[in-house]
Length: 414
Ligand SMILES: [Zn+2]
Image (cartoon, rainbow, N blue to C red):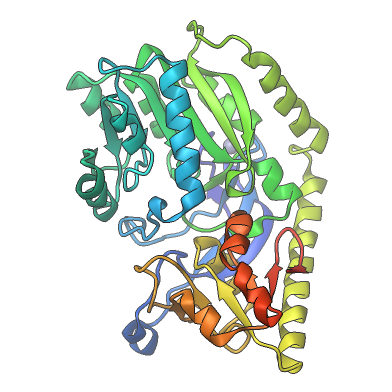
């Protein structure tokens, strides 16, 4: 198994974790698909580049634009909306954004974030490759989007048409980018000389240290550390000037970036960068043995989840799922868990209800079914939203129902 490094173009052969074959995670299937159409599986493995240390998945021939009907509408998560609202208010204040400013968001989805800048009177523009969610942004919030993948070409088109961004936000998109160099050079082109870029991305340190292997799927091409992102920025004459740790998506970094050498309003960032750099070095993200231990931990997670489900089944207990996130696809396909162990899962998104999880063919139902069927256990699949979900489902304690999470390790509580 080899791939060409998505940053430095070196040949990458070092497999960190082989997850076998997995379907595309957001390919929710209808009843007719399940009955009649073959399921296509693709190799899924994490590799590490021996030269630049970028961890990335193996290159597979996924269908073109396999993200185009992306089923994830950001606005369905309440905690995520609050995160977006707080962020917009803070950036507007700190960067002194006004009616003369320009905010651009890459991967703007259904306008979940830009709506808050727009409400404050700041001009906004979305760049969103999925036509259906871009349309939702316009219908719901009046937010205009360019329906394209962001790259060097898109940035040149925008800059030629006179757009210069005071703030470019790219939350949870870096990992989705197949060609990192074209992508990052686009920011260099689009950013005003005094502008700021904010990247949020799940932190590789947390993925490895908390065994979050289910965040590995085909839509996530790379898994990022501060060290590697700083190397990529430097290659395009950009630089980070501050970093923050967030609890979103299992632990993310929020990186503030400017043109190399540019002055910024916030000068206190160097300490925050040094702290994360030191934490990555101390953990040993560039040491091979860390990844060997990670793979062993993933195997243990598989064994303990399967043991729990099989024992519950044999004991006559019922286990149902909550949520149908992309990460559930990795977890359930890798562990080989079908409806015989998890009869169905529920999800608040109407788009997913009535469909099936790819590969494992587990039906997705409306959340009210949990309260009709009164299961003994609810397996929380989007463990990153655990607090929110446990609060929503607090009522299951009425019949002695308990919660289960598989990551970072099997836990039964309630
Ligand atoms: Zn590389």
